[in-house]
Image (cartoon, rainbow, N blue to C red; front, side, top):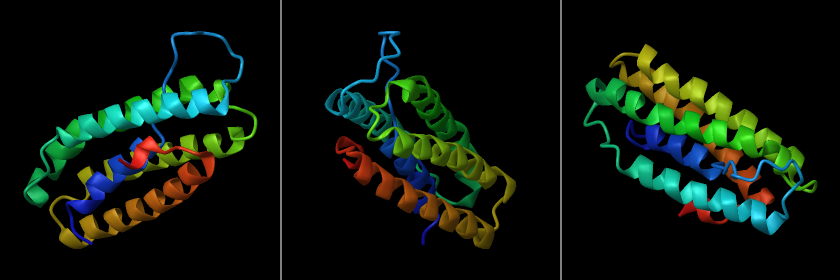
Length: 150
């Protein structure tokens, strides 16, 4: 467990579930192919945004990193909530669980700002984020998202 892995893990977790709020305001469910294509595109975009943020060199840089990356997680959550009613019936429940996990990830990710430079506390928050990431990965695989792990 390194300090640098888990802030990125939180973004990866969220990126795995990044969705797209389509311009079409219809509330009709999308096909699974349409739905996952939109989510995968947003995942790739979110990954690009996250990769553009400079990793902290140490604990002292963690606040800046959280400030720059937490909005990416919040955008993903908001886009997913906007897409939630368009989820195909066969993946709707799993998708709702993913939305819940992204909310938990945002809260947990924000805890990095509360731990200061204490490496043990940073590692503990990182471990919890890793668990959220594992849960999200499993749901994303089950749901059929493919472009999110790129």
